[in-house]
Image (cartoon, rainbow, N blue to C red; front, side, top):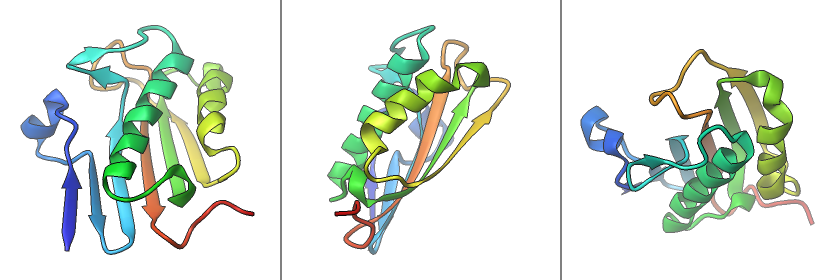
Length: 132
């Protein structure tokens, strides 16, 4: 059975994708940015944008019955790798105890010029849990 979550991003209908999809115990979360109500949040601030993107991402996980503790992989696409600590600090606040595998890759641009970070995640519900 396939379950989908939409966050109403202006690009979801246009491009034809879901914010997150769950099949069985596995959840894949699409690239998530700091866009709320069609507006970029935290323009110019990597930490704020990462925090907002992770809030949206974790809300999508919750809709599908998962928590950050179920995440086994994240990918962060950033437009300025020299500011990695700002992106990383926000990521660590959510996943510091979970420690999923992670990548941070610099890209030349994202879908909107004010966006600085886009984050993907994969989760396995009930099997990944954070260490005790």
